[in-house]
Image 1: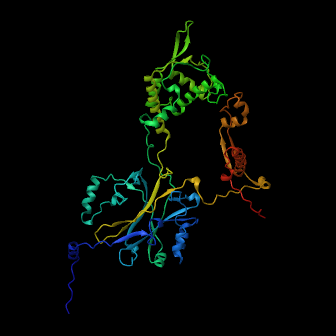
Image 2: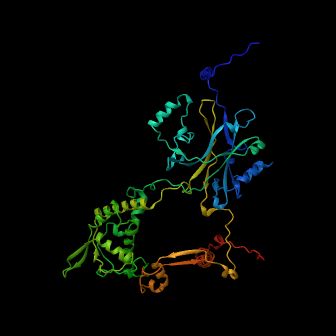
Image 3: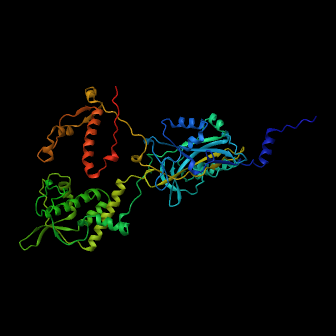
Length: 529
């Protein structure tokens, strides 16, 4: 009997390195039950939907139960519509990992090193992923390839032999690639996988998110608009911001008064009231939309071009202008009085007329106003959220990383895309209504204060004053001097009052909109006890 030679461990390692690597195990990640894209997403209304899913998968008729959970709501175009958790609808993606052999045997879960899912958006026939770099969220960006590893650290993985060299290169030249947001994908409990004879993977599809792009919203260059968009935007601007013939001003040579109520709709047939209202809308547009009194290059440029307009404030007996003020200075003094309704202690007067504005000057005013809108949009618009656009369409795709032979990198295996879907807005859910119990009238005395409002002196003095007199301009401005108050109220009482007021106004508006049938549903219930 000849004994087999025993190799030294070092010699064995040398021989293993010379041997060709073991080929990858051919693996497929497909919809659970070998279905198609329409079978990937299931919807559950169970509160403990994960346990509910496990019960479904463990049932003898699990396939029939899953059929009843798919495609519950579709739009008129046939597109799948997914509800939000606030609608008590929870979306689950289901997959199975198999080996590509006759009989499609299940993949051993031990061969999976990691797994996950991505949600991708499609626009213009191109897929985009929700991307981030470190802590910075960059938002939806087109993909370089829809089968690229979402983790940039794992892209281009190579055998371990040159791992040290690649690590040194990476430290000197760190990759700038962005990572795609990955959602958790999990292997079902072993007993369920064994009972079904499948390696089942599931993940919760997050259709609600507070995530937003880091940084400002996408800018809008209002001055670069063309066609009907520019026509509409320029048409929206007040006529005082364009070229125009000379015209007398309302209340000319009278001291400005906060009691003019320039933003109130004038009585029908009141020409002077209409002219005053037009001027008030002009001042309001300057103050709110264009931020003409604000800081920055755009408001400063608008003030500079408005300063070229000289408003006559006095004439001699022959009608010659003897005093003027520039439009920029005048609107800066008029806005606090006529829009903010402050006092006019300096006796600022309305100029006599708005002079002719040439076409050339009018174009420069319009350009400066549009630049102010661009700057204002940057200030006010939020960066886009992950699922903000209601018209967007999405799909889910899962992946697993299958362990390679010793010394070889893991293999990335992608599933097919799920069917496309849109996400329903919060107000369009078809789940059960949230129930709020109101106290019985006989129990109101038992309701104790449960929320406290900390009122500073100014608000406390205001509430103690005569509201009608203040509204009519006859009361005194609330003083900030005095003592503050801590007032406790009952949330059920607040809810009850709001409920009563809501029903009163709904009844009034129903006369116009006839909406009561759709927005209020009441059914009788037997009295308990």
